[in-house]
Image (tube, rainbow, N blue to C red):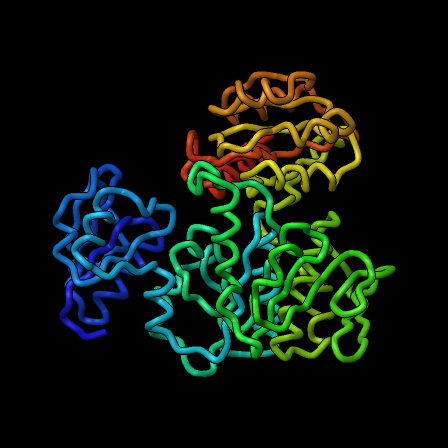
Length: 437
């Protein structure tokens, strides 16, 4: 790309701000357009011209428009941009164009992305000094693009939003964890959502690796679409692949290797995450002993079935990262019974009915918060509900209801934006309330 061209930034979320700052450093003239209210953005370079409250035609005075993930591709200003032949890039594509790297590991899936990416990144860091973890976790790649080198190993967590906007993406190692209904309010259909996820491996060559969950029917069905060398992982023995057996992780690729790490994070879903991270690291050239050592010291990530504290014999867990129904299903499966469940938030379009049996068998009561409460009650009519409205009321009521042996679980099955900045904000406020009990 030539310097002194004009770049338009569509959306000033975290990735949009990072892309705008990178563009300024590269010598571009930058104009940013955001649909939200006018606000001070401390991290945004002062050279970036900006508008708030909607997208005017000013952004069309650009040679390139960088679209933030989550913005619909069919909004009017983008339709006009296409008609005027303005090049539209995702922030991911823009950052990769301006990065150097030895290898890219790209991780996606409906659930487990953050844990798998975090663990993979830690294993990679133990083997390669020059490595970063980026994408949906930590910081946008644009923040570090100019600090990368030809020896950098990049581990990325990627959402369906990022992948749908980057159809030419080709990582060295892709990881597809699972696919269940999510973000249907954005993608409109399940087919569109699946197609977005496919972009993680659709352009890979036979020289690349695709790590795929054998136990997930959709993942297994779409696996033939990639030309990469397929490495399956699963909880049951596989002829070729990586699987869990009697506490061992068995790596059966070319030859058979067993490692026996200590697993510190609860739930069989985390076994799957560990298997995926093991596969990605092994394909990146990390020694099995190093993989075993890092897994054995790994304690998990914030907001994903994160133990907070015990109050009068009841254990409190923060699972604010559960922003969809399937993620809450996974959290409920991690505990056998006596669950006091805080649920609700901003609805994402998927039904809550798949939780019926788990709630009947394991949940003593649901403490409802947020806008989705009426739909949750409609989809799960037989549950025991306590209408709380907000987090503070829910924690206060649970404090009086919980007894020794109960599990208090914040696992909302919804987005957070009706009452919180994001799921991190929701989880941290929950923890603050619990620690104040």
